[in-house]
Length: 156
Ligand SMILES: CC(C)(COP(=O)(O)OP(=O)(O)OC[C@H]1O[C@@H](n2cnc3c(N)ncnc32)[C@H](O)[C@@H]1OP(=O)(O)O)[C@@H](O)C(=O)NCCC(=O)NCCS
Image (cartoon, rainbow, N blue to C red; front, side, top):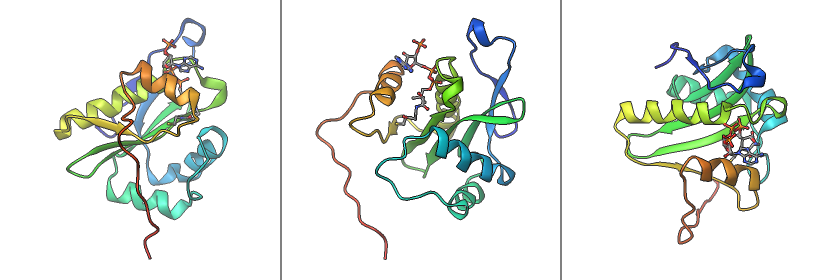
């Protein structure tokens, strides 16, 4: 699926500005970090590094979906597949580009990727207090699983 751009759904007000979804490459690392600094939910997680993003892109070159407008990255979604589970991370759309269907288009692209890989269920990590995120995930058909908690430890 890498390299095959998809047109995102566009609202009437943005129809002159084409947004395409494709996979991030190593040359996008700095732009991705800048997008996440400006647009991502940055609470409760370790700081991003360029090396960590490079490791992801080298391990799975289709895992990081980006929305581009005129060469600029305006949205992202990591669609991680480990052969067992389909995880979604880093759904973020530039503040000036929201409510134009870009988040939904990124999710659609991730769903297409996971379907082609044989996944049957998607999951997303969502902070309890992230109301904006809740609205998007709910609108996309996701439901919170109250009975589960994430258990973590740093790897030493
Ligand atoms: C959440 C986020 C990715 C949504 O991106 P987006 O491109 O604006 O989302 P879309 O335009 O595709 O919206 C899809 C649907 O989500 C819901 N939604 C999104 N933003 C909403 C808002 N501000 N108010 C109400 N509903 C909203 C709507 O149902 C919308 O469908 P509609 O426009 O047809 O009503 C974006 O707001 C963002 O980057 N937020 C900060 C980062 C973040 O919290 N990410 C989620 C991490 S879990």
